[in-house]
Image (cartoon, rainbow, N blue to C red; front, side):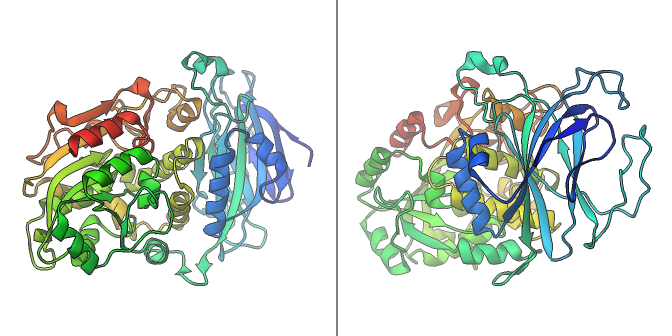
Length: 521
């Protein structure tokens, strides 16, 4: 279909049957394409092939289909138009209308901007039927809104921020402009069934059922041969008892949305090989559901697999896995929680939210999913498709308004009940170490991801606080209410902004390998 010109006013412009845009303050053009990924689409997102391939596979696995692709080019409208916005404005919202497919179908939009940042967009809440506005009313709905199918529409509000010219980041040597044209966006219009034939209706318990099927509990081998995704040996209480009799063991505990292979797959093979030799082959990993259940439930399951006589453990954990590990190390033995079975000696926190992350608050969960989706697309490390599938599943549930079944995410809320209880608990005898990063969004894709208004360096979620795009930097090792924190500087590996290490790229860094081998000597 030929491109449709956009007029920069509050007028709704049809771009194809059932699809329309309203772009106050921005002119440009929009082209509506049918169907899923094509060769043309691939050419448009050249440079993200690996990440997009993984995302496409994750969408398919989550039963999400792309029904339309909108290729959109925007530029600020000339001053003096009906919107009152100046020609120099660089931010605003556009509104996309798509056909409402009825009560049995969920609908989402995924945008890819010209710098490569990905954002999920949920439908605007249904409102009572409203009268179409006059041309001078920028905030009023532009057409009646229907709650169901039969010719109604769903609306999506999408930030129309125009990206900086490529010269802004050229000196860094790390710029990545994917679409190659300032102010260009791809809008992927996605649909999915609201009832899964196996898991049932998307709702409060949907993620729990999904994790039961796709993220079952397991204590698995973690060898240089199988740690990146090859079939692994599933340990039993008997095999773990045999390992415990031979000496201390090393346990890897992954973070939210992830698995052991995805979370630690970027760790260099020589590093894991050296650790295996050091621990006499007694290295294993804990796979567990991380979104629908809290860390205490994870620990209760794990303790049931450990030998009654106990096992000496050193732990390397990532992200929310740090909270699982702290419950294991710090909780006094009690009925149903026999933590005496795990004698934790040393614990290495990799980007752990020991003081929480605001991204786990309900208002910011989509921002967390945006960041992780973009990180895995721009910088894929290890088997990312399985993590992306979990992210897509959670977006479906959030779009349906079912936040009560996300106890694993709620455990990371800074003011939440779980984290308050952990940080007020009993001090552990284990030695604690930490790896944290203060990431600076020098890459254009990540500039777009954390941009706020016209300040492309301002992270509106964390404010001025340093962070790795998911977890506050100092929250990994500084004061949080627990007597075990803050950690001494000699026990902390801190990446500076210029080093470009984000939440998902810690374990591929050579400095991390060096510290692991030093701390776990």
